[in-house]
Image 1: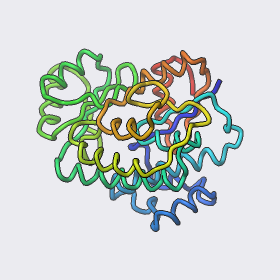
Image 2: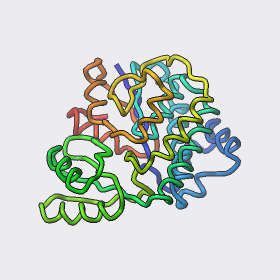
Image 3: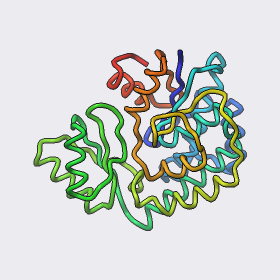
Length: 269
């Protein structure tokens, strides 16, 4: 069985859309947005999120043989492409929500400056101890030995120094805020209000939620809540394998998720 995987923010790169530029997804997306987000990637979250959403669905459009997967999942932002691919949310509605989400997250980051710190090779206990000591959130549990902390900038800086003294590899992420932490609460509230106006239908195949590592039950509530909750990507991959999935196909411009599949499950994606 096959599962479709859609990457999240951080997977962007200049020119990432070129192979799909002539497709209907990119054309329609630019028309709906009223601007070309691919030309403004350097301006940050507001443009990176809709651009990545469009790339994920453009990649799917170019692979018609993937129209009947066993399941799908998306890493943070990628959940919106996964739900759209499954027919749970219309493309137009999803793009509008993604654009609003990116703008709301950028504004939350401007109001309460924060950051994210990747811990490479660290165990869950190490990450938990650092998070507790510096009052940070574990934002991402991506794979064994790959966790990310999130929170206010002074705490991130202190945790980075602390990690160094413990001989843990730490790398600051190039993001505009403390994603998947309490500092995103204003964005989550705004997102919840916007989602209340969106029609949600039963998906054609199960789409796994980052917040529960299980198929979405209440799409609107879970999407809003997931902006504040840990991305449980490792657990999501394990749950997909337990469902019987043996083939994972990443749809988008970056194949980082392939590495997380191999690290977590020991299989190539």
